Length: 418
Image 1 (spheres, one colour):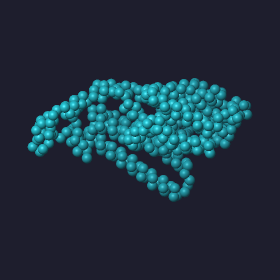
Image 2 (spheres, rainbow, N blue to C red):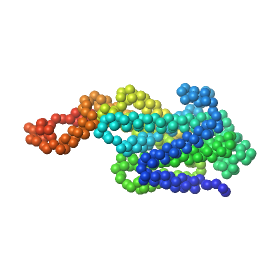
Image 3 (cartoon, rainbow, N blue to C red):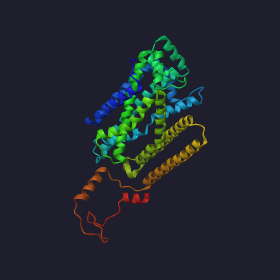
Image 4 (tube, rainbow, N blue to C red):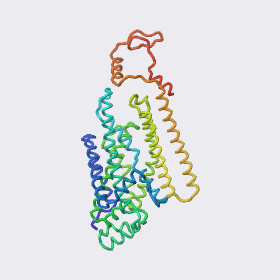
């Protein structure tokens, strides 16, 4: 028929994903360069769509700095919340932490650590800026191209005029004019702005999918190493983590259709929204705790700002999860009762996790910590190893310096914390 069926496309994507993932045998830096290539492809392809659609630049700037939506109702609010919530992915926190940890830094030199932190800040800022620009491209294209349009009518006219090959149109026959997924969006762009927009959109979506798949896979590998202490070979970890995602996807592509894939994607977004607190709250706790970070802990203004932003993002994600679940759950009171019980349990645990994190951070900032640099700590550690023990103290303890042992201030802080 001249086109690749959905299940075959899934198999091809799986094959090239495995190929790209094995690039890590040449080192993580090479893999990061490949990520950069995928992001560059997304920037150029979605930027092309932005240039073709030509949304009002004044309205785009106004929407960035003063978000508003005139004559918008509940459906538009749900879409806006979904856009914000889908950007923040919990696994990226683990991935970025692991990549930072893989850098070769002299961690005994405080100056080198500060220099590395500066470069990490620049790197993260550039990555977030590029991500913001790409998301602006996509949101602006959909806002200017789709909002207020009858998608079904546009695609029907397109089919009648022969602007798009018929096998692309067939999968969109039964769509709801209010439901626009990634596939329908590409068809719509091709109908309104030329078939070149359809193929360029497909290339951008392919690059985005590969980038997302690879980041998710590597996050799973680092989580297995860190939390489960599983030291498998790389190809074994890749095969295991990818198989978990491959099997459900293949099942849906073989026995279902594009609409079901879209539903599965919505479910995964909800799942990640639910998981987000378990990544953000411990991260803020560790980076703000002086017992863990010493002088490199977050400052108090940074603690306040990061917590306010985190609460906003978490609330937005939970609202998105509620909206999606409410839209898909039938009006059957036992189901609502079960969801209510799970929701109360979940919220209670998140509040407990937050309270525990605040308690740890507050206790660590009240504790008196040693004002030693990292170099001093390393030197003292070496001295303890090379200095022979001397006479025992009156309580039987032996100190490396010849005097009685004294409780370390870190131990005092830990005792106070407990």
